[in-house]
Length: 286
Length: 282
Image (cartoon, rainbow over all chains, first blue to last red; front, top):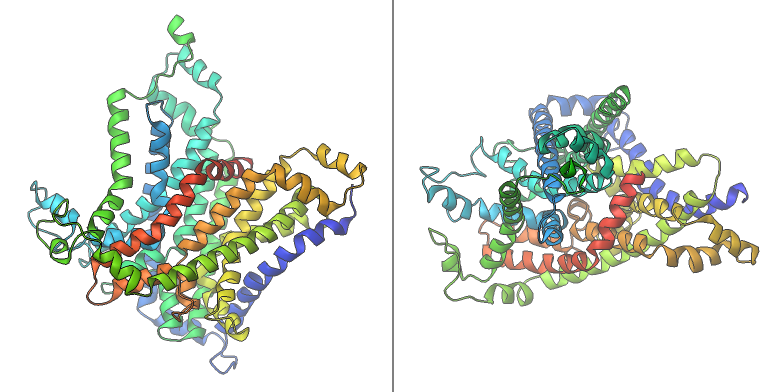
């Protein structure tokens, strides 16, 4: 009903802002990655320098481990919580609101509060575990090389499982009632309903949410940076933090750009593989 | 047979439901209780083994320190200016863009729509460096405008996405009637479409405000001067010094969390409705 250009005029301001803030920097990253400080073309030297650094492969595996570990538990706990909050019980509305709190509060607040709770000497968690004798002595959760990553994953899971829960809950609420009735006529019990009705019906929601979690996971600097800054001994150094450090602590902008390009490429490949894998199994669970 | 035909759900066994609810509520609330209790403890009470559950002499000293002897009030003002500014800008841009996407057909629309969403898919760490250089060239490092603009990357894509699906749900017939009556496109947008999409607008405002209020990484990179630093950075400074004053950190955390909690809970119904509607309509 309208001329072609009117719609474009409406859309243009937002597009210009995004192009300026996204398209241009992305292109500029590419340029930075193959030049030196003076802007001279240096081929792949920056890439070589970054790949030669010992921290790079370590950060790569840490990132996979952090993002993967977080997502598995975020999805499992979030879905379980959604099913729980879909039951009818007194005070359900309040409980639903409370569940959202971890997701809404600032990441830095979550990080500092948990850091205080995990404090080796004065932390409440060590006290709760040593008091009843679950653990013989306090653990330095955030300084011990073997516990620090699992602890950070746990904090990250705590922060984001509410988001999964609220999205899956919305999916559960849109399941038509006659599906349940049909199952009940067939004599299904609760767990069969979960497996044969709820999970298949919210599968697409879980899939979409997981993609978001992958992206957010690859972006998550706040919690790790605020608690450990990548330490101890680079045990929690993930690639985004390595990029930040290269750029702003070592002021190696060109190497940071080279690492950004590689990080971006890997992230893109993961997202594409994920979307492809989804397209390959359409409605398999239906 | 009569049992099977009733609408009553089978549901989880009641003990499991109760146990699950108690666990979830405890996990979600306990850190904040501990934060609150720690914020009113004196230093000796904070550093005792075993920790005490409730201070014998509750004190507001930590709050006094945070509110009158630190940079936190300044950072609070900075956070308010930057969050309000970027939320407002994102809302204006998103309203026009969403209306364009929802009501018009033009060449390249699918492509442009996916370009907008790419912003949400981009790893922010990958563009920190060039963004910093761009801002430096524009003279926007350490300015309010720098952060306000940069926050468009985070807030604009999802805002456009949510509002587009909201606008699409409003019957076109209403607008067609107004066009026949001689209303202009802008008149229709502001007099008919916007008033009808108040819940969507509220959802976008809450989302954009909460996101920018909480944002850490961009603020860390682009606001290094205390005249523009935001609260998250202030809190990080507090806690990374060698001797962390945990009482003050917890008090500052409370100060920082309160506005967001108030905003969120007053708008929660609308916000969650808008968010999940956008998600399920995709």
